[in-house]
Length: 283
Image (tube, rainbow, N blue to C red):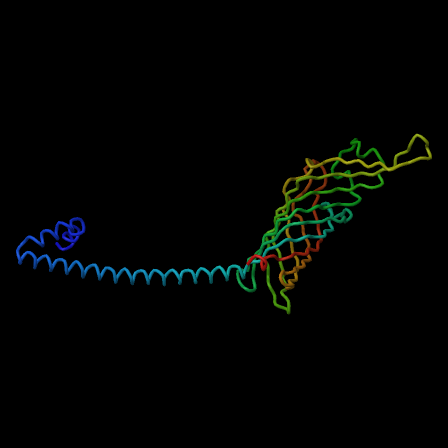
């Protein structure tokens, strides 16, 4: 009843004052009791609202502190930055015959999250340029191909590759952080190029010059090479950045060649990577 009257009082306050002035003493007394109750309800509601506001503020502060603590823990466990690699790569046949190693390079980024102090996981996408020296053209060309008609001084194969390694990182405290890492890498061959160099005789028989030719042979290779990486890394703090040096070996499991009736070809790569951690500059 009082709740209904309270609503009526809010909507018709001026009318109630007029009634209170014109009615009998008993009516006035009744209205005074009602007004007193309403005033009490208003004060109580105000006190409750005040406490609710304090509670809300305290709860908000606690939530912000927990969020800040969680973010601090997350940022302490994450490392990211840029990296560059020097590569020595080759191709082997299924019989185990190695084509000559050739220098190459890689550039990319890395992000590592430490699940616990001793164990982390990283993803390290990069672009790599790998090469093979003294490449045997009979591995990808059939007899009768013009590429087999000349006596070449040198032949090279170059591969452009997008690499996406996902690595488990074992962190060991040895005065500095030493990492033992390994895991799969998904390598996407975007371009394959065959370079040849031969001596060409000029108009005068005693005059010779070198002639280089370039042929794109991407269609003779698979698009995805499934590989595995193992290695060891060393982390050093050089404020305001972190320096990391990795030494690794990469072993290909996919037959690179799609040319029928030709030996299977597999990639082999040795590399040294220098990375610069940027997380301290950001967090």
